[in-house]
Each structure stands twice: as C-alpha cells, then as structure tokens.
Image 1: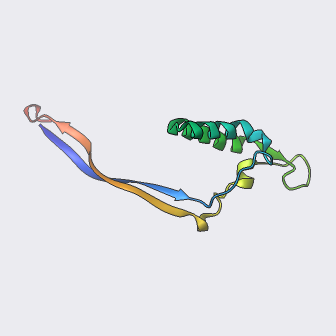
Image 2 (image 1 turned 30 degrees about the vertical axis):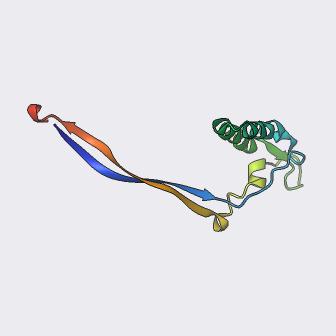
Image 3 (image 1 turned 60 degrees about the horizontal axis):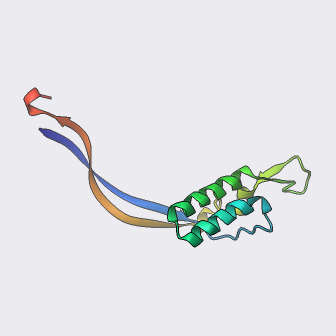
Length: 115
C-alpha cells in the first residue's frame, strides 16, 4: 500500500479591531440580542456566548437606522456600518494562534492492484 501525502502548516490568524461600546439605550432594537450575550457569558457557556454574539452581529447588519445622515427618512444605514470599526484597517492588530503541522492525504494506492 502506498500513500501520497503533502505537509500542511496550519495556524489561526485573527485580525483584532479597536474596541467599541454598544449601548442598548442608543440602539434599543438590539437589546434582546445584547441580553442573550450577557446571560450566556454569565452562565459561562462559551458555545452559547459565541452563538449569541453571532446573532448580535447579524442583527446589527439587518437593523436599519432611519435618517442616518439627517437628510430624510428614505436613506437608511445599518447599525453595523455606523458603530463597528471594521473599516479601520490601519488600527487592526493581527494575532496568530498556535501552529499545527500535519499531513493531508492526496491518494491511496494498492500495490497489488497496481493503482
């Protein structure tokens, strides 16, 4: 039997943007999602906290702010574009996780069958 392999070097790269404050008084539309984050964090449930943060992230994109530029109520911007710092690439920090070396399988052949 023969195995055709290749080596892979894996590591996680996370780009961390500057922190920002999300206030439920300013954005009451997000209060339920923010409460879910607080409760999951308080319970110490990492998976539930991750899920709650994802729901908050989605809601911030889905929720429009009327008259964002004060012109009229027809133009609407989402909360994420107003609050989040993702356009601020200059101030983002890259963090690298632990490196993992491993093999990936490309093919298996059986010498007896000649493959």
